[in-house]
Image (cartoon, rainbow, N blue to C red; front, top):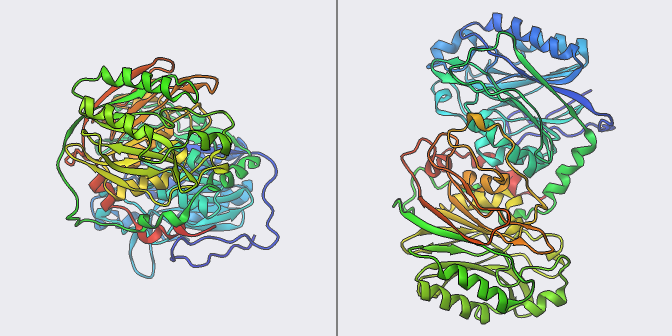
Length: 592
């Protein structure tokens, strides 16, 4: 196969399908090789790694992924220390692996430190080899601090390579902390993302959401040992395009003995599912995403750095569909029970619910202008309880309909609104999408970002709210399980494990924006609303805080409390925003 790159080092370099390219028709086996290299032993590592990869190939694997920096070990402190072990591409590593790829008619992805022979710059890189030889490479875009002491930031964008197995991209470890890495790969046509990593939990945790958001397979390869007191937990996993875990290695605690034999897992990749990617991307609105190309850091004089304690509640109840009077009574009863609460959030379509097949005629009958009866009723409720209130309605504006969230202050005044930007299929028949993603400043609480329902399917929304430095995000929802899914990652590696029924995409919003996220949902009715209103937090993985999830069936004012920002924590909004690489993000705003 003759494969050419537009340019090796231009923005999001992508391989175009060669004339006559035919996508694979039959399922094949992918393997993750959880290899533990020996520090300072490149040549011995290549030999041992090759033997382990060959074991997977003999088992029938046609795609094999090995960890980040698999040929050398990870924690090098200077360029001088790693100098004896870097390799060019092509070089020693690619030569050894290409022999195996040709012998078994397969593809192999391995992480390694690369030396550019022209510039002598070092990179944390990965190579992809196949039966045709060296297919390509990827230089890590988002580095973790430990690598910055010897590695330059990657300059290759997110290349996608055409192979006999489909289109393959590579993300490496910390790349998963930025939704843009997997999103750009999908936008440029990736069917599979190979994911070499050296993860203590965070990097591998968020791949379930990336697979689900983008409709791609993700094949992770982690380590399961300790290097210089840094422990990697194993738990290499293979995810399908719906975010289902197909295979996962066991969790390895720091106190556990390193397995004597390299762990290998296998899962079937079905090319028939590659079409899911196009379905997931179809509802995007690139014209809204220009803010993602901004990076107001490290200096931003507009940011309020004040940390605030916030008490809130997610109002969860079973609506009587279309009966505003009955629903107002139910909502008022719950809100009136609240004491010393600063912020209450109601579900999407707060006082109506929605019919299973909403028509324009029905939507028009329930619609109101922003200053209509719903506003007056909610305003009185907010003022009476002295709390900030977020509710949702069908807004009527000069004959147009919108799904809109409204924020009221403690006096019942309207502080701001948000019109849902990503409508579901039914809503598209009668509503217009909003034209911007915005935040609202709430005195004494902080900067509030809003999303509605299916907005969570599009990580760009949370990304924009992070760029706008939202402290809190609210998601009024009317969710019956028609999208998303529950967390499937092994909880043993997580300092503060997630409760049952934690929803992947809601949690991904909180992490991606580094903003506390309150979800309010209905229960029951013929729509089978799933409840599970929740608070999703900044970093339960390493023990900063704890996600909370409400009942699946109960009517309740679900209490939440947190302190915003946590700027001194090792992972925080400021650091994540500062380390973004917008130069490579232009595909996010292009029409594909």
